Length: 204
Image 1 (cartoon, rainbow, N blue to C red):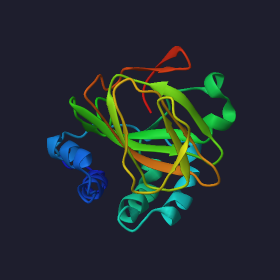
Image 2 (cartoon, rainbow, N blue to C red; image 1 turned 180 degrees about the vertical axis):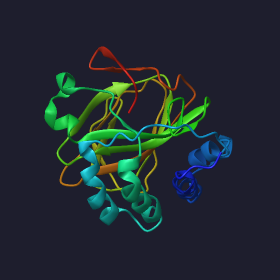
Image 3 (tube, rainbow, N blue to C red; image 1 turned 30 degrees about the vertical axis):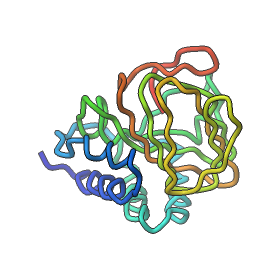
Image 4 (cartoon, rainbow, N blue to C red; image 1 turned 90 degrees about the vertical axis):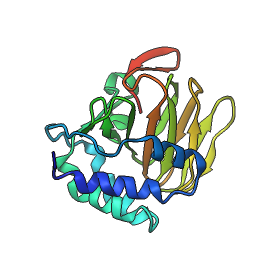
């Protein structure tokens, strides 16, 4: 089945294929890129306003993907794992994710999930962990990332950030929003993440 989102999936694939990293190459090679499409209703979120700035910040290799994402933003089904009662209205108004493919994304894949995460400026995504292995590639720079017992470290656009199974990790934006590509594999694709000692349904 062809859909209007095939071009977005192709750009997603093309960007991943351009990353010179052994872990990413392995992940890309293991994905079956011919996937059946799902018909999902559009679900825009407040955080999508940050895509204009993300387009300006994206490096050349990621710009075609980010520009197309920004153009199609209101047609896509965006998700949020949390509500205002979890982290407050400021967080919710600046947070959301798009599952490009997976068990509930725009394209069906039972083996791996991948998509994009948005965080607005001055937001802390608190420590959390999950069974699935996670690969992140920030498409904007200037965000601080923490893993395990270490402190926060600044990551730039195009860096590969790897979170092994059940390793605590957190993100903290500063002046600029974060747009990051993620891949989940090797565990339940819609399992519970544990945040500050409590289980929360969903993923990044």
